[in-house]
Length: 508
Ligand code: NAD
Image (cartoon, rainbow, N blue to C red; front, side):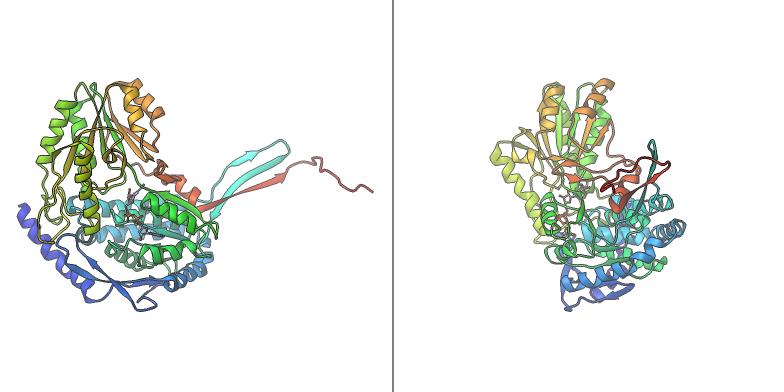
């Protein structure tokens, strides 16, 4: 059955890929698809077999300038559109995404290497992002009533202006919608710079949005290399804020690049997230969650639980169970419905992930399973799912974001020890804990230095809840009203209600 569905998927993707190979992916500026200003392109390959998918327009500062000017010109009209109309339009986009969900998932899967079983949900989640923020659009301007003794204060919000959105290659479709939908609901216009290693689904998204009725110039997509097109976007004077998802190091560069134009920034960056398993936990459920949260999405996930902190009383038995599950993971073509682990995004990233196999050995850790790159003669960026054991908290494999299907297991003695190890990294995005002790669950919620904590659960998203990290994992929060705080300016209006004393100067 799985084999038949796989064959079906291979047939279904052929006409989609034919479009990408027929002509270069173009920018989409002011409602039109256009080639790069200087006519240049770069190549985009599939990590499945390193085959050429097609060429992509290589944006430079000129393309970014044209796109930013379009977003600037359209801003007043878009910001003035009644929330109800924005809501209807965003729902229409969500409908169109749902109608195209299968094609989006197939293309995303082939372009990124992410197994189709996960990408199906990512496309649907993209539609949910539009629906969720559509319903919030009408109230986005609402503020607070803040009465004082002789004055009435109230706050209100207005969209900040045209914004730049820069997205990474991991689940690029879902992440683009997670940023673009709230910006549009708030009344901002957008210039989007997708990741150069995964440009295909951004091109589908911008077309879908316009076919659903988005006015020209409201969202503009410029493809290109981060250090060129991305940099120009962060430096452009028409752009008032940059919403960025990517590596911590890139966030730091963007902050510098945006300094001259005083950019507001929102950063969702890297992580080295702990999953802490105590001996009083439901260990079967914990085992499922530990395996899922690092080996799903190829481990190329900011909230992956890449450090397993396991209590020494159960460590040997629990880690052996993890090892057995890793041994049974199904590696294969991402379009095969049976596949659990697909190829990594790009040969450069594959080399980075694989470099940690030697680092682990040099540091004295044990590779309990995996640790190899299959010899496929340069055909595909596959890596074995890997488990490092006997690791200590100070090792590089315990400190650095590897961003692949690679788990580092570290033992701890008690709760204090677990918290110290969990907090001993530069990142602070997410933390997971498994325990049967309710008091401990609350203490961990207090003591872990991370932006999001899940207790007795894998990553379970709730769109109104704040999403984001502390330390080197980010600045700011997304989700619900938190997103509007970023895409909008808050204004306070203070009106005197009585004849209060006004100070007099220069009495005559
Ligand atoms: P990256 O930082 O290399 O690239 C992200 C984007 O930034 C790309 O579009 C790239 O072209 C652009 N870029 C690169 N240099 C730039 C510059 N100087 N100026 C402007 N733009 C520039 O990240 P990546 O490798 O594509 O993505 C993986 C990283 O993203 C991981 O670290 C992961 O943890 C992180 N991530 C974080 C979250 C989160 O919510 N915290 C979510 C997903 C991914």
